[in-house]
Length: 338
Image (cartoon, rainbow, N blue to C red; front, side, top):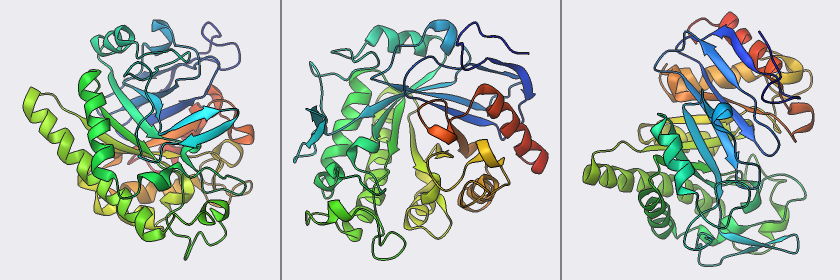
């Protein structure tokens, strides 16, 4: 059953797919309207996540009604000046009036919006990082991550302070930068490496240490107020191959994580064009990565893996609600454990 009430280009998914214990769906919202997915017979262990861009329009209550998580994207350590990213060399998060924008490029954190989401039963989290901090793809020159290497304690304190002050429910890390240029990423981050700040050892230590410190500090915050705080990673599909160093780090730190979101777009998979099992347009199948995350990384805990879609501005990877429906149905058909 479809309708166009919310979004003329991205139709509503309404009672189109039965949700089993596997089902976790993330919609990456860059700009424009949000699509809506209404699961039939949803279970408590299912997640439906919206990543809300601080540069995009604020969603309405109707648009966010069915979501379990709202993740505000993203806190960063740079200023945008004349089209360039000027990194804060002390790894200080950029704030407006001591707070972060939620959406519509607001000058401050809209506490009323956050509180209304939480009152409706949603988990509201802060994402840190994103492509603007530096990316592992040809042509990118941003290297703001480099200035945070070795400052994991300081960065973790900043993030947890924001969570506490703004009544949030946790932190999501979105690291899309290099971490293994000596092996799998030899042709990547060339411009950034010329600046002399990067090393694989620093990057891998950063990912491991920041994850650990955030979990410890969120646990301490939890002990002080009785609330539960979630820590997650949002990761590109290419970085979730079983032989990647990022995958190794996630596996070692898996007990610290509530779940991870795999970005099945702009990388080595393209389930929109190929289906979950195909590799014609991509370089790998989504189902191979997805199953390995569940079976190996999380020891068959399917509820800890979120299948991430991009709903706009991702070229051939952009997914409509119809695409998302059939991809999720394919996942269930291929392996009913999920």
